[in-house]
Image 1 (spheres, rainbow, N blue to C red):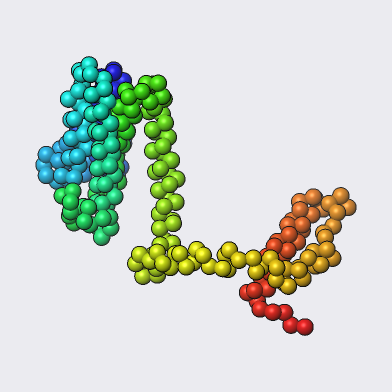
Image 2: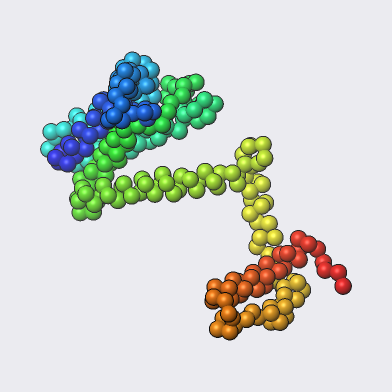
Length: 267
């Protein structure tokens, strides 16, 4: 096992066994009151919470660290790579499983929470300990891939790519998935894929009726009669002309839509 991998393991054990797993309100260097709840209370470590039976769902990430630690002094690079990859993958999956299954009251995934031993339990946001453990599991996976020859075996390059993928998944794909999730449910919150398909293929979205309707061609002469003043001949700043031109363009584009919503013109 490379020295960099050993350092990653030490950081993981630091987060899992010594640092508070959850976010502690008011925690800081100027206020040490949170130590009263350390290590078995609100500022408890994952290891202490597991051993005391308060949070058994935090055991799987610890088992992943144990599996990787067994190969601390191993010289079999290929076998170590296999163990690191499996420890990283399973550790990350179980980490996010418990994080999404056990959240606030009446939220989360009840069946998964019960499977992890946390039926009816709640937990706060992750703190420093959980953050370091998450990074450790990610880097164990990346180091295992590097041992197998990914990016020519460069630990730093593979770890950087893994970190970027994780950040993109958390801060881009996950929020977008949450937003798009509302398109697959009806007003009562039930899963309704048929309603999504019907709305997605609505002719009002994909049809060309607005482009060939008489209202569209009525808009063209109007834009010709009102082309907008020359920016150089205006006493005001050029931005006024740009705003005027933008208004004419908006009328040209949105004219057919406005005619649809208002109905046919009279006269």
